Amino acid sequence: MAFDYDLIVLGSGPAGQRAAVQAAKLGKRVAIVERQRMVGGVCLHTGTVPSKTFREAVLSLTHVPSLAGGTPVERPRPTMRDLLHRVNQVIERELDVVARQLSRNGVDLVSGTASFVDPHMVSVAAQGAGSARTLTAADILIAVGSVPAPPPVANDHRTILTSDDILTLDELPRTMAVIGGGVIGIEYASMFARLGVEVTVVDRHQRPLEFCDAEIVDELIHQMREARVTFRLGEAVKHIDSQPEPRCADIELESGKRVVVDAAMFSIGRTGATQGLALEKAGVVADERGRITVDAQFRTSVAHISAAGDVIGFPALASTSSEQGRLAVCAMYGIDAKPTRAGFPYGIYAIPEISMVGATEQELTEKKVPYEVGVARYEEIARGQILGDRSGFFKMIFHRETRALLGVHCLGTQATELVHIGQAVLSLGGGLDYFLETVFNYPTLAECYKVAAYSAAKHMRARPGA
Image (cartoon, rainbow, N blue to C red; front, side, top):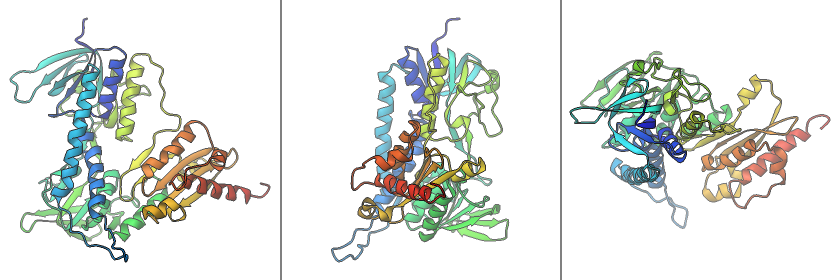
């Protein structure tokens, strides 16, 4: 059979973009089908780029300079219009970058909503068009991303919200409840707290961000509480009433507590955006949350159909999704490519931000791996003093016998940048001796690696027989 394309990619987010470009670089005929008006997927329109730009706008507009005598200068509270102005600028620029990249690599962009007709054919219905067109391909990659799990009550986009609604608010609420202590919930809770909003975080787990290092999360919670965030952990919502006038959400928790706020943002997970794809016609199955199961080469149960990005579940980060898209295409066409040896780095853009790569203490303890920890605090580092961040916290974990680096965990200014030094050392199989012998620029936050290495070496020397 003669196909229209070698590869059709459903979705133009990070996984779809990277996959399409990789296939084009291999000389394949590629098309991307995107249902939104513009390319970029959730990452560019409502997810990673807008939320991180929103964070930087919050930090910029709430920074309080001081007079020569050290007296803080009062600044007016920013408005949503102020905050969103910068967000929209960045989105427009990134849209142009993505569109140019796809065009430069000869990737056809097809606008419309896709659904399978059979395992090799998709129907694309353009908005406002009378009839759909069909496209065929030898291989298909599903990279449709995810959508917020719907709230248990009607979403009016003003009082009852999801994370997708944040950038459509016309004014800042005075009080807010964030239901769900995952990555998105914690990020927005910390941002709104920085804006002076009274925030309450409700989560059914005893601690948020359970996949992160416990000590790092404890420090984050401490700093967020200092920003007047209230945590209701081990709690679940029993009932919620939304009132239009005066606008408020009355939340009753299962413990009997009540929280009355101007707005309630539900961040209770995300579901794969597979509804409407007619996966059954292709022989592909999604679970109850719309996620597609794949093997180590990102293939679904149908050999020529692969999936990557948020639609396959955790970790559902823009960086990991992009790499999954590349690896999926390499597997399709017999190119030898392997994921990074160190594993993916994780970045959580709360205020303060968190980043990690490698193993946590909890994981190593469960596996009975002998280890030592080295710690550095930003208040000990000249660059930390210069930046005015005295609460930053950095730790490295080393194997007690081999001295190999096992994990890096950081909370504070530029944590998501700082972690990449550790990622490189992990990938190359380095360890404690590298950090003891290497000279870092001064003053930089990279000095944390040196201080933490000395800390770990001290603990190792303290062992009997060392």
